[in-house]
Amino acid sequence: MMNLFKKGLSTLAITGALVIGMTNYASAELGFKVSAATVDDVTTTACTTAKGQTVDGFFQGVSADQVWALQREQGSKGSGSWETVSGFADVFPTAVGASNAAVQTMRYSSDRPGVTCYRLKMTTDGGGTAQVQLVTDHNAPSANLSTNYRVFDDFHAGVLPITTGHSTASYIVHIGVGANAVLSVIEGQPEGVMTFSSGDAGDDTDLSTGSSGLLTNGALVSSGTTYMETRLHMSQITDTRMGFGLVDVISAATEIEPFEANSNVVAEGAVTTVQNAVAFGFDTDAESDTWQLYSNNANTLGNVADEYATGTAPAATTYQKFGIEIDSAGNGYYFLNGVLVGAEPLAVATTAVLIPYWWAGTADDATGTVNKINVDYIDFWAPRPTS
Image (tube, rainbow, N blue to C red; front, side):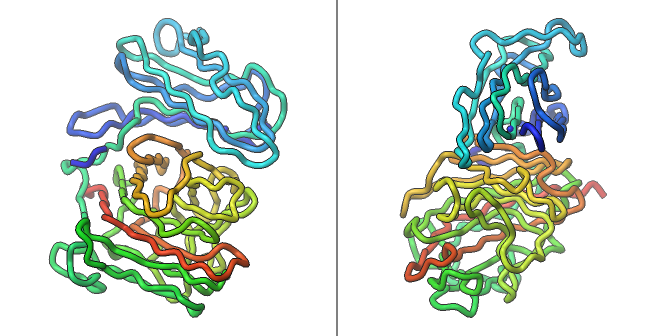
């Protein structure tokens, strides 16, 4: 088993509980609205079911100076009577400047047994736009072998199996027509690694891309919880862009790059065949030189196509662990080094079929730098069909 915030256009999201293991928990709750967010606006509620369960909040945006309070429902669920949790009257205290900043977070542990419902309420509006999420009891992924099948590769084979082999996923890998991109291959290191490298041309024709598995064996979102985990590092963190996650296409010679980030704008690469995807990424053209959280639902980019920066930066040649979970409603949850660092409501369509995918290129207009990625393992959990 694995170890496991817009005045104007605004997304307010809340989601409920999923916990790893064999225990049966209530299905995840999620509510959100897209509307003008101003004083006294609230998110929909999310509830805990036991004392000690976590309530996580996330806030990031552009020129956002807003005060949000964590509130708890008094009495029974649906009473409509709310109080602000002591010490949580301003859970995101730092105003965000004109440039997108890293996500602010809060965590509260419920001190009450049974069902207790929470919400976030804006009490002061100093202007700007932001995205807020509140997540309850979801501090670990929930995939397990009773509800999911698992494909794990620690890359100890001699070669990357481009065709299906026994107990091994099929891999499809490509490089572009630019200079110096390197195909995904297995290298002999103690931990077992797959490596691939960007080129140095600084354009969309110098990518290295790859995918694991066939779409016929991919995860249908509506069937249940989908989870992907990987551990990797980069050789350098200048003049580069790269990413990895769950995507609804296989690698192709057309050089499919699901996401790019540049000056607080997220977009697809030059080839726009991806319809649904959830991923981590890093791009030195972004406002924040930290890991980014990406999503695309039926060609609508998540977080209103703004950067969603975690605040955690990569370090060259230092491994970090990444997990992406998608529930059956298409909501996405992002785990970095075992910690929930963000969430996106309706990150992908429920009809999407997803497989692991990775890419590496060079930052726009940058030349002379090749970035090598070392992937320690890929762990993919997909829902077992019920029929």
